[in-house]
Amino acid sequence: MPNQREGATDDSPADLPCLEKLDSPTGSPPTASLSSLMELENCVSNLSLAHEIVVNRDFCFKPRNPSTDSLEGRVTEIVHRAFWDSLQEQLNSDPPNYSHAVLLLQEVKTMLQSLLLPAHVRLRSQLDEVLDMDLIRQEVDHGALDLHRLAEFVINTMASLCAPVRDPEVRALRDLKEPVELLREIFRVLGLMKTDMVNFTIQSLRPHLMQQAIQYERAKFQQILDKQPDSLDNTTAWLQAAASEVVSACEAQSDSPGPDSRGPLSPTAVLNRAYIRLLHWDPQDQKYPETILMDRARLDALGQRLQMLVLEASVLLLTNAQCGRVVFSLQGFVGKLRQSITALLEGSHTREADLKGALLGIGEIVLQQMSDALATQGGAALPQESQDLLKGQISELWKQNNPVCVLIGERVQGFLQDMLRGGPAKRSPELPAPLGLLSAELLELGTAFGRIVHFNQTVFGPFYAPILRKLLFQPGGAEAGEDSR
Image 1 (cartoon, rainbow, N blue to C red):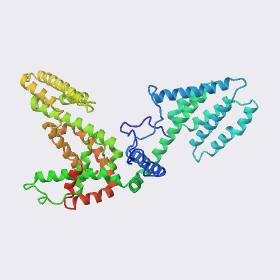
Image 2 (cartoon, rainbow, N blue to C red; image 1 turned 90 degrees about the vertical axis):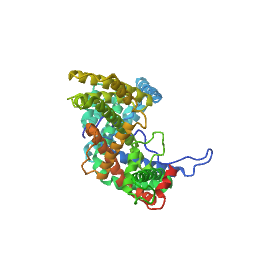
Image 3 (cartoon, one colour; image 1 turned 30 degrees about the horizontal axis):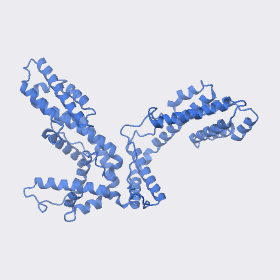
Image 4 (tube, one colour; image 1 turned 180 degrees about the vertical axis):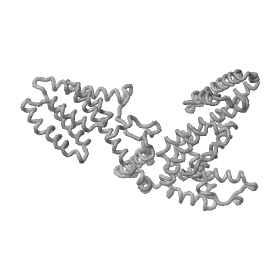
């Protein structure tokens, strides 16, 4: 079995998405039976798990290990200590009491059997022979139980089954002589081995899952929709809002704005606009489209990254305007400046006060690095008036309607829309200035975004089609979305 990754990626979702709405008046019985609610929850869980395995190539399970500082961690530690202390007392009694030890051996046998493959016929036979529970109980009754002999067999079996990454931990078991400590460590390592087996199985099944993912996710979502018909309400509102934006954009570009002056809207244009809106979604708005809910964590992370890139590009644009091409084109100047900007912006998206402070610091750094660059070129220092102006312009970038950020944001949005229109196989469009300085980061972001969008559109296209048809090809359909948001 190959080595497994030690942890899951950060972009993995912390909780399974909840598509169902279980609200009911206080004191009144639920409208659906408990069995149907459990069936719906299982359907959502299976859909979410399958989607995560297919979309997140680094997905893997991790053993649950609550922090020792948390209440759960403290309670777990107390309960486990009490259990093993009780076992210690039983084994130290005269005569020793092996009742709990036998139960633990039975559980060890069950865990080892779960790790066996169909080809392990001989090993399965040895396991049944050595860990014969009836024989072990007879040995206990006659005072002939040899825990160390059984433990040695268990460790040897674990060594033959474990992934190479677990070899050091299995070898360390051989150095333990105290029975309680040995049993405790055997259970811990067996738990890790079971997790390794699950992750190995996931990696093995991933190619098959990828072939079946589209039909599987579509069928599972249809099951949810059959049980809860309002599971597309937020999706409908999301598409209505995007259609209204496209209508407004078309009317703004028309010489004679009005619903009769424009041709029929493109469903693809509306859907692409809707996907772009997800990158700017208000975290406080809980009416997230049901069809995108499983990718919300990924899209939120991309949206935050996009916000930081827009700010970085805005700072570079303002700096270039003030210091001129001579300094800005110096070897290493932009790279060093970008490193400083990125470091100061990191984590500043969470609170407005943090962003304001970061921008003030960026203004100081920009002026310092500009002064150093001008000094090395033997040029005159930037006038104080220009320094104050640049610092003030950078400090104002936090405002929502800042014209520089709006300009950069529109160009980034156009770039992403061009990528979506081109599909996953088309070459990425050329980046306009000053975004060319961030080409690698924007291309990476656009590729990740396009991958999510393409898969989502392929899976949920049949659910979007009737909504878009109703919005775009019925009189007043798009405009109705403005009142439903």
